[in-house]
Image (cartoon, rainbow, N blue to C red; front, side, top):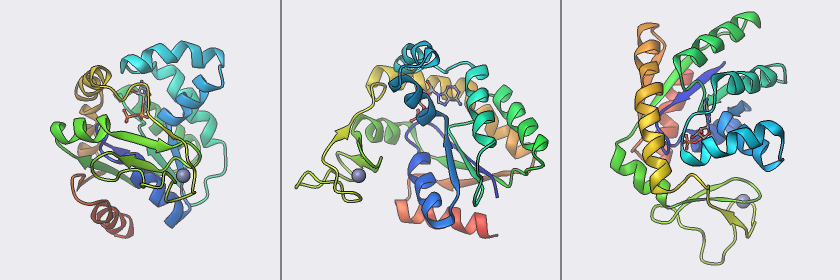
Length: 214
Ligand code: ADP
Ligand code: ZN
């Protein structure tokens, strides 16, 4: 089973993807994570994308499609979760082609709906564990007082360079201009399912599970 998690920055795609990896042995394909990895390992491509990412803009379709193409060659286990991809209609078309080439299906596109005010609060207070990637939030889920990650015990936490108000504005604008048309695109194909991204993490998890088990 292959699915797309669709929604604005901060909608909770990464959090839900991590759950699905654990509960269903699916493979999370986050283009954001891949790009961050490329930049921290200092590859040529990483250098090219760093500035674009920090500003909140979209990296070129060519680069992200290339990254996804590579990953589709790997082990698929319980199926792929596309997280943060596709973000443009061109990427959506490319994904359809790549899946067809591998005789793979796209089983659901799950839209996580949230409002902009909630996004700003979520993202502005966001940090992640440096060793396992667990996500924390200053207001809704603070880092434990003893300074240890609840998941792995790690003690280093990171904030993303693009989790600031200025970049967030650009990211939201990019989302509405270039990514939100995908909602109509997948709706028209009969593949769109929507969940309330403002519900508790557990409720969102349950809603997604119900869709996948239907
Ligand atoms: P978020 O969904 O929280 O904004 P991501 O980690 O998915 O964060 O993406 C971070 C940044 O990486 C984006 O703002 C963009 O610059 C780049 N990026 C990630 N995925 C894509 C994509 N599919 N197409 C273009 N750029 C992307
Ligand atoms: Zn951790």
